[in-house]
Image (cartoon, rainbow, N blue to C red; front, side, top):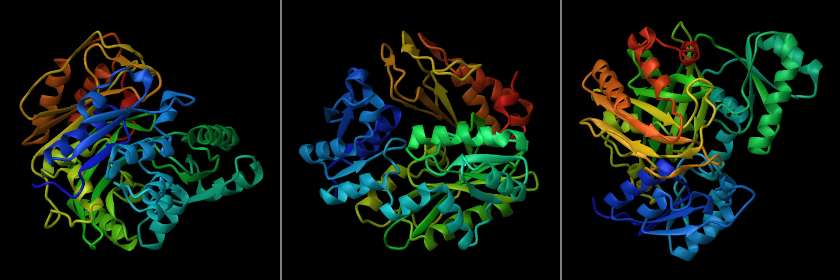
Length: 448
């Protein structure tokens, strides 16, 4: 494909996702600009980019990546046409999108009004309900108003989940199984939300257990084209955060798969969605689905969808941001099966981060195995950022082949200097429920 209208793109992120975006930009002959912090030394993404700029020192290195003014200023200084935010940090920030518009830089993401709507999880629920997408019983509550919270909880019903209105990634979520624990859960969730997102607002929602976490990838352009790329099963989680994802979802009735895709495309059209997005659903043991949230950015797990469809989702993002039409003629059916494992520098039992130097970091090279990385041997894993070391994405003609390849790849890793969650990942892959494709969100927690 010939070069898009962008000559140069600044990537407002780091680690594996920055390296992955650089890969597509190179394919499209687009020059890249990286940003980094002094705490990272000479990170891999900064060396891979055509240009790199140090971010101003902030309260913490992580906060530097949240400095929208500094990032846009670097984009202007470097002559970048656009900013790709990756995931996390400012990827769903309407403020960054608006600041880009003010300075004549294209934001590679959805429109600010859509991002603002979906960032407010309660408002997103209401919008989805209004366009015919099922939502779970829920209520907005005040963390410091015990009487009204108890009244709302009695209507929603126990067990329930307390969630932050803003943000994502499982931050602030609290399970409540009795009224006696409600007030403490509300306070903890509200406090976590304030620290993470600057907004203490929370809401309660009926808890579905056992449950599966299924999501649908959509891509939409400004010309009215909305396409889906099938579903992913993201049920293997720890602390409400995904660690294993696969596509297509195993043992999902074809009628439900089609319904979820149709609902996601319809919701995209009815909200005038533009860009890459993911509609997430919780599915109960009767195969009934409820809207969970919508993410207006590239997902960590987008690679499993790319492996079974052959579609470069980052390329589609760039096309849409450039005002071009999608290069897909229709929804793309999956070919074979793909599984992703996120390798973290963390204690495999407690899931606590394990910072340190990567004294050894030798990863396998195998057919049908894609590895997205942002670290090299000798690099330091600091406590300032999410400790994601690499993503392994295995493809097979069938699910069993993908699982076998993934297990072999994980077994072949040689990583030292930090603890990793590889033992947890392998134990999950070998669990009978996972092997049968009938696991739920409780899989990881049930491991010995």
